[in-house]
Image (cartoon, rainbow, N blue to C red; front, top):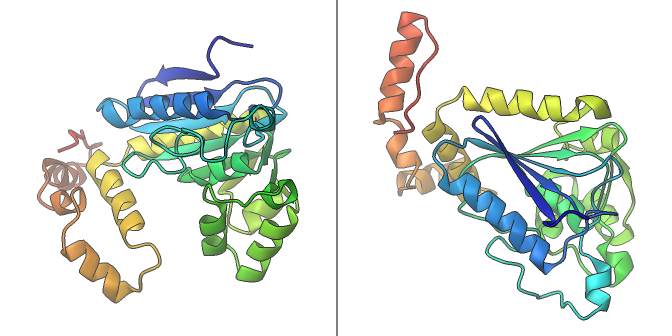
Length: 261
């Protein structure tokens, strides 16, 4: 086992975070805090634009809560750190997009960890399941809220109370996964999407994520009222230097040079 349960790599403006806890990349409290600290780096470094989260190996993305730790006394309400269980399931002020590159099984909290990302890419052999009810638990690290918001309620109920497994293709058909690719192409696809995000203005990306979070579940009238009441990133977009640069670059037929202000 590596010294740290989490490996962090900077690739240009991309932060790659790899969960590395053989055999199943399960999450205990120290691992959760380590994931959070990795994404604090993403949040706080202005040169970093996108995070990619994946698991070591090709069998497990993440098996969820480490039940060996639970059996040894770690409580369900343990100190998971500032981002909640698995570091990002409650990291509300991250402000930068995260791509989950799901390289294998994503069970229980591991599925919820993937759902906490903004974009999910899955290897074609990946399998997803919300297994908590079969372990005497509930999917309260995001599954109970996110899955019913994406899929029809009867399907959400079935997934949550039976723990039924989803193939990567079925998860994509249900809207829980953005893209399914051969395993050998997983990280290349994640980087491709990350680089496309980097082509967009940083403040625009932050504002879009902020508005989506602040208006989730609202009707359009309430959504307009919410953004007009003031949101920190959104309120800066129209008058930003990047908005002027975007218009100039378009007229001049060149790629924009973003300043993030």
